Length: 334
Image (cartoon, rainbow, N blue to C red; front, side, top):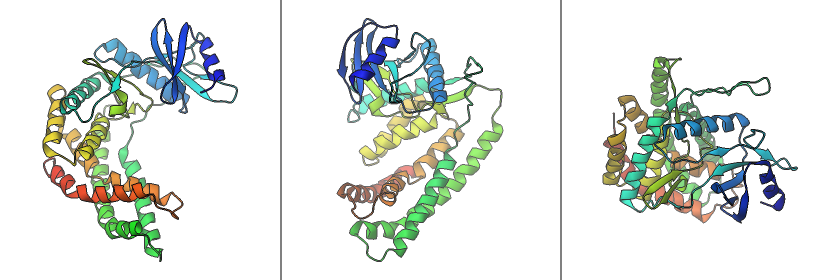
């Protein structure tokens, strides 16, 4: 960020005492405490939704989370002369959640359950001629995974037609059929579950939201307290989206340790028990070979002339973990 960006802070009702560089942002020491000023590339509708979610959490008073600050004119973002947009939020001087600390991870799961207990409400947006209310649609993960499946099929076809293969491509081609078969099976069963869930929903009921990117980078710790940040991906989706995201990350880091996985789920359910439908949803999300798709996606959309060594290491690590992953999934079968 440059001095022109810092000058945009004059549009806010704050007194900036000093600024310093953060991770891709500017930290501002003010009379209101520490604030963070960062670029924003999302839609205005999403920003308005984020504001509603954060205001609701603040009103509930159970979770310490960031707040969006508006300008003197009431705008949620400011734009420099190059068209780059920025947002200003509250910030906490703390460290990221330690994923190597088992007890801290358990606490983070309980925190997530409390968050989900508060994120069921119906937003109210002031509607004007210039700003119609954002349209809230339930996210359906099966659409993304059907798209993933098509990408896996294109990559498989490409590999079969490729005459000169690298070691990575030989290894990938050897396992892709079995992973794709699993992906298609999971997607079909998952879609049927989604259709049942959507059909049973009450159109007048409250909307359930999720953080959208619940991971250790966005869980800040100071002494014994937590502070949640980066709600830019919050959306209308079930709690399982967040639960799956953090659970898969932690299980991959622990080589799919079953005792850790069971402990993490128990920590969540002590606060907010999962319904049978949510348990099935979580099972399907964990069953889908998303890590393999990410490796294939990176490979297929790159130049393919040079395969990064890191990508080769990720594939080998994935294959080494596969037995442990399948063992963990067996204890979760609905």
